[in-house]
Length: 171
Image 1 (tube, helix red, strand yellow):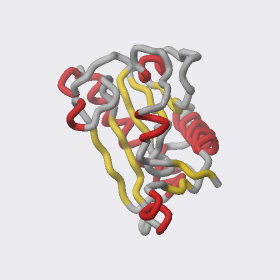
Image 2 (image 1 turned 135 degrees about the vertical axis):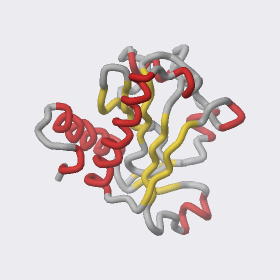
Image 3 (image 1 turned 90 degrees about the horizontal axis):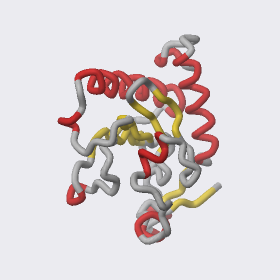
Image 4 (image 1 turned 45 degrees about the vertical axis):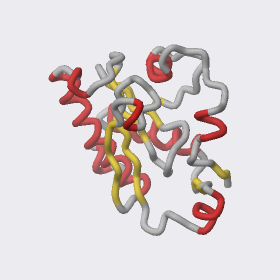
């Protein structure tokens, strides 16, 4: 079991970041300077695990185009991101059976956007997810190794993309 710190203070905010202009563009371009944690790519969108997840299954959906505001999405991108959000919820339901979800955008630094490339967060939520370690140490125990999460998601999306199984029928 691994212990991950959700405050992100040490590693994420104060730690050394890859020397790239935009981390999401670097994921899009498969830049070797960044960890490749994308699980699915459509014509205009990418689904990626969050490198610093709040919970197992925390993913982000973002456009290939570097834009900052949801109002910059064109009609096709808007349709794709909505469709991928629904597919992702189906995949998460099958893989993790969460009790609920937080879904949303952070646009602008003051709103919590630490990356200036539009991205939609989907955070699965679980009943009784806070324990004494979370509260007392400002840390969170993530019950699944992120590498296993990546493997599970890539397999699930490969099956969906191949048309082998609808997203809501994954076992």
